[in-house]
Amino acid sequence: MNNGQNDLMLISLIKQGDNRALDSLFKKYYYSLCRFACYLTNRKDLSEEIVADVFFRIWEKRQEIQVEKNLRAYLFTATRHTSINYMKQEKHVMEELNEDFIENTPGPEAELIYHELESRITDLINFLPQKRKAIFQLNRFEGFTYNEIAEILSLSAKTVENQMGKAIKQLKVLQKTYQL
Image (cartoon, rainbow, N blue to C red; front, side, top):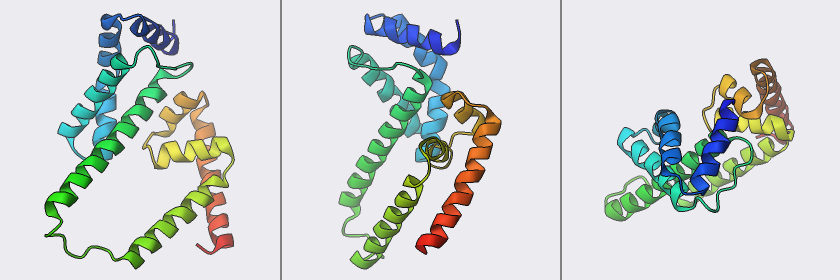
């Protein structure tokens, strides 16, 4: 039984209320998910809390979980979303605590320029073919290596490398075309 089939078996057991299956899944992915969360948040203590929260939610919502193919990708995506939510919460709390002390806050004009630039970048990325876009986002925004992306998308590492090269070239052409 390969890793993917084993993972899907674990999810099936978790759905049936088998906490040993959750423990096995936790042991299998905990350290790699913590590294990923730490990469996103730059905080080891927070990364451990995030991953614990991901597994708590899996157990809590075990009846509703829909994982049909790649549990590893599902876990990394859940960790990414949870990290973003934690960082938003933390940012909000820090802004409330430091509201009177914040200096050099970007004005509305700088914020508008930032959001416009972010929107243009997103638009450019959306021009990429679907699979190339997924590869680009997994590498540049999720921090996955070419080998990890190859595993997640069931491709060869060479294909991922070639698609990344094509994505970068295509984005440069699009950037010149749209004068970003």
